[in-house]
Image (cartoon, rainbow, N blue to C red):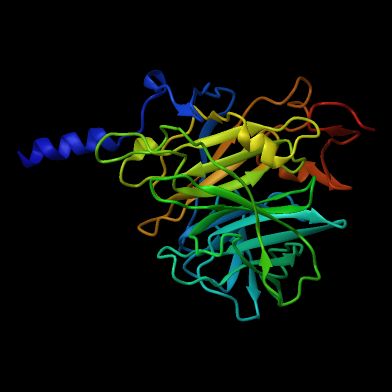
Length: 366
């Protein structure tokens, strides 16, 4: 009997195969699966040399080829490693007393400078109420000469517009509107999206977030013991917006029932706000497979992003997701690891070859 129960439980939590992908309902309508992306493991994070419980990642824009990582277990520094995850390239210590429980990491451009944003807003029991976004100008990474850097970050304290306390694990920054977006993590119910303009002059005064939308009302991407769908896309743990602001990723995870873990993808239209984009139907990524404690996600460019896990019972894998570049771009970027070919100029990401500069959609710029 015990063996039968073990087999039954094992079958129950194995992620659904691609051939048996279910029909998913979001905002009352059936979703179309995204089949453009493929997924493979590109590395394994060696936690003995790096950091444990990674809950947020962001691709470096100052030194392409590296990924910044933040932990919700060690909340006074972040580290950088390459996509293979074996060796630490940089340790960034923050020399200011900052709130515990960091949950997400994002990168962005403001007034011509690259910044990193840390979401210090985890509150599982919804009893703390002391929330902030930590920010710092991203330094260059020199793994040979500067493995450790100490910086004093900025800190934006905030409260929610309803006056209540919320648990949160997802943060993203939009280079188009220079806005920070924060998404609550709700168990078995609707998660909410809030925003705050990024500025350098907030000081110590608490700022009030602006509510913009719920995620997936009348949806069946949740799970209940009574086998009834919940009202929304629940348990959001990570999010990111592509450098040009065109694409949005939001992921969740459910460690009780693995088949209720997804990455949702939105393509933002020209002139469309993030709020309006998120009110439209997303596409779940068909290539995604469940990650235990899978919380971290970040875009490299419009065609590539990474995920990893904050599991603390071993060295978590790092996954790369890619869809085909437009015709001609593959000749410029011979492999996803050659990130030194990506450059940021005037808030825009380009692909650099030996003799030309290309936009991410394949157009030769100069």
